[in-house]
Image (cartoon, rainbow, N blue to C red; front, side):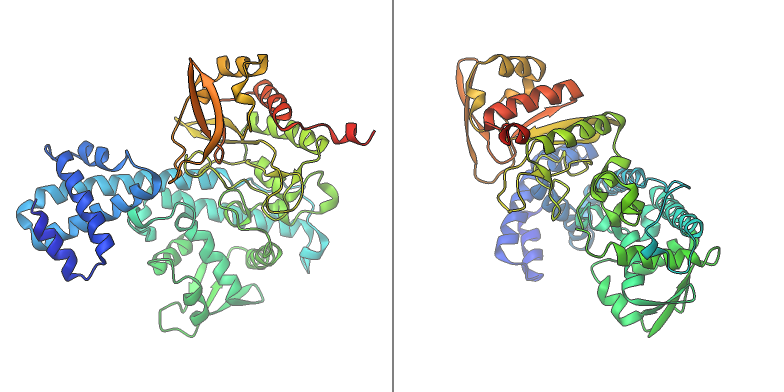
Length: 450
């Protein structure tokens, strides 16, 4: 492994000095790990890092493979091992992501009542049937992606954003509508606008091919086309329903997790008079685990009782990505005291995949109560010992302002990510909420009005 040769290679590519310094650091670290050229050593090199640094390490590893193949063929055995690891990592991640995408699609019930303003010339039955066909088509596409991601043009893992790239299939469907005109159940798509819309996605033609296998027909599609036609031969109403849905959810906040673009939730087009809760809340709960559903239904009422309501502008909690739990978490409804940006937040509860099973977690920011040895703190500390130990929050500059004592020591807790409780039950959440209310001096809004 010739460090100077690799540096010369980067310099010839006119990489900026900052990137070259980073790659040189990665080079030294990889060299330490590759005393034995094995995939587990590559894994050790990459996976001990924070999220951003890990993504950069993937980019370095892929570039280093290219460098070896071009400039240092005597090290081809090293590039083979690294490339094998990258390929398997990508496949595993792609499949994990697409399985979660499928879980987020709650089938529309046959007795669902669609808002009349969305029916147009269709009957309620026709709309529901076509919408169900659209959902099944997307699931079929995801099934195929799971089996053969590369056939759908998924880029290498290192350049993949888990939220944007893995939504490529549905983003293409939405782009058909936003760049097309519905004429009798067929979309006439302006090719120039379409390619501009999807320019961040690679190998779009492979996604188009995949969608045709899932049931769509795409005629006249090529890079020099002016127009092309998209239809769904088995049921022309599918195109009409797709257009209606895209337009109906145009102003829905594009959250990273459970949202209209990922889940194709019928809740956003359902008759509001049949809904007891906000569409965002219902969409999240439709694909939540049974345990999370029970907790959130209780928490919704409790939040309202203390003056917290779902944030209309940002209904799904989006913080905590440094830990990764919320990266795949669902049901993380954001309850706020008021609509202002810096309004007080309620505690966050959601679930995520853990060892192949759904696990419910709670996250709450305590101001100063953790320093007191009261009965509530003791109870939670016994139940969740890991939640009350020092941990790295992922912040570049330590942001802890919350100090508490444990085992004779004094520790800072991250005031940004807060305290995490894993594998919680409804009773646990009730205890956590009680502590939260005392810490924040929160009283029932009903009590305040008396």
